Length: 331
View (spheres, rainbow, N blue to C red):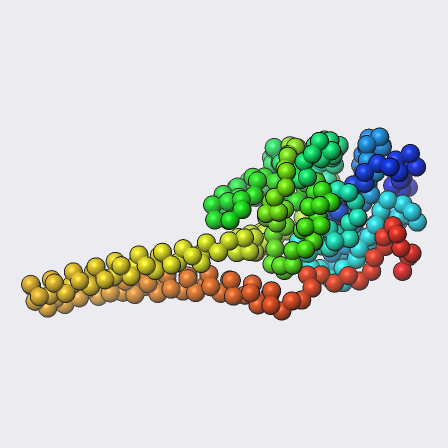
C-alpha cells in the first residue's frame, strides 16, 4: 500500500514573494483530491523562485469521503485550507465562498479533476507580474469533451455573446488568474443569481490569456448534468442582460402594426366586396400564433420575476459549517 505524500510548503526564503491562492470547489471528489495535490506539489517546486502557493478547498456539501481525503493531507501550518459548506449550494456559490476566504495576492479558481492543467499556472503568473490583472486560460483543444458538450458549449457562447451587455471570451471557464484588486471588487457584488465567468469579464481590468489542452478527468465522474448546465446557462443570460425583455417591445409593436394594417385591409375589402365569411383554418392559426407568443413572453417575464424574488429575499449565497484555515486553530 502506498502512503499519500503530504503537500510540503515552500521554504522560508520565499516569504517575501507574492502569494497565490488556488481555490478548488469540490463535490464528491474523494478520488481526485490525492492526484491533484500530488501534481500541485510538483508545481510548488517549479514556482518556488517566483511565488508562494497555497490551496483553499471549498467542500460543497460532499456526501462521500472528500472532506476526510482533504484533511488527511493537512497539517498545522501547511499550505492547505478547507471551508466546509453546510450543504450542496452549487459550484457558483462554492467558488464565491472560495473567493471570499482566499487571501493571496492573486487567486486562481481550479478544478481538482485535472482537466484544468495546473502546469500552465507559471505562465499565468508571469503574465500577471507583467501587468495583467486577469489572465484567462482558454481551452485550445476540447477533444476530451463529448460531442454534444462541445456543440452545446459553442452554442451557449454564441447566444450569450449575442445578447449579453458584456460578452465573455470563447472557451474560457472559471480557470483563470485574478489579481487581488479584482477579487476585492468581485467580493462587493451581492447578486445571488450569478454566472461567475460573466462577472469575471464584467469587472474589466487589463486582461491577457494563455491556452491549454483540456484533459480527461483524472478519476471519478462529473456531477454536472445537462439539466444543471442548462439552468446555469439561463441564470447567466438572464442575469447579464435585459434584452430578452426588451425584444418583446419590438415584437409586440411589429405585430400590433401588422394587425392594424390587416384590420384596415379587411374593412376596405368588406366595403367594396361585401361581407366575407372568415375561414376556420386562418382563425385557428392566428389564435394559436398569438396565444403561443403571449405565453412565451409571459415565460420570459416569469424567469426575470423568479430571479427578482431570489434577490429580494436577500438570503446568503452559501452557509459555512466549519473552516480549517492557515491562520486559525483547529475547530
